[in-house]
Image (cartoon, rainbow, N blue to C red; front, side):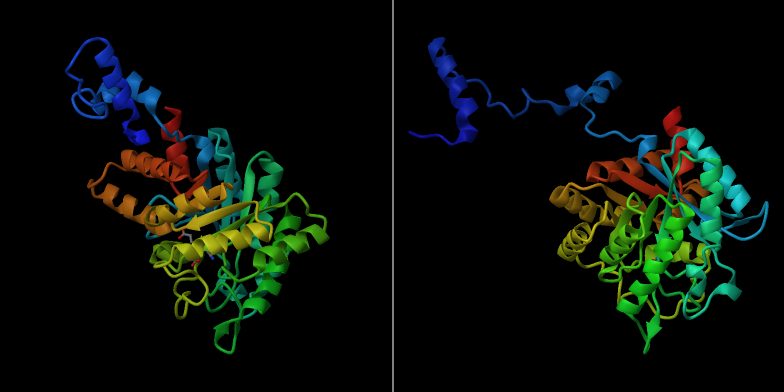
Length: 356
Ligand code: PBG
């Protein structure tokens, strides 16, 4: 009689029992009461020993909103605890982040309304708000990584990530503008460029331009699987593009119904020269994080978005949720899904909690 590999342990045990002259085989392993999973959970030391994933400050990326001015901070209404900062205060914030051990920050400018136009021309200004912030932070805190968003939405009068031609966001014209924007940011000293626009072919185009212009060490974090999501609402308020946005972004960002398509997006971006890839939003898309990490094994980041921040902050304000515990549990879920790092507006709070 042949037995399947699954039965092997059982039959060995039965053999042993027979040799020992016993006629009653013991309970099959894998079953209660021999197996009680609670044994390993009883003591803190044991839980620590068997813990499968770890969350550390090294996993955190802190997004910071910028405004013009000096010693200026304005609250973001749907994100209690988050403020837009003038460049001098952003430098202070970067110092604080570095002191806590946060590896990188991501900068998002709230461009003056008068500087927004159809062509997103301010995006190409080497002295625009984000470029000035990059230079100031690099000068004061040289050891923190600086990530810049490559997309036109903080600069367009219509709030879209690209240039509109004949009523549509035009892919190839937009890519031309993104290349220029990327070069301006690389020149300012950005360490990582993060195209978040979802145009086709932009990663390859930007990589090519970086190589041609001597920026051979500039990293690209591709927002490879970015969904047309309602979780971005508070962010759009923070950068001042929400009220301006006409229509939706369904024509370029991904359909929340799709999973396999995310793998195609990621494959293309890696092929085109991305150093890391991003899945966005976060919690509701952890299945995508998991699949991407499993399929490609490349550095995979996830974005705990503004809407996700708002949900936790609002419930915590009402005393409905324990903010600190929810926060650490949420960030651990990202790690369990396979994320190497997480963009989160809670980065400072999380770093503080992890220190204690
Ligand atoms: C801009 C951009 C967005 C976010 C990051 N970069 C908004 C959007 O695509 O509309 C969202 C971040 C967040 O919600 O926290 N392309």
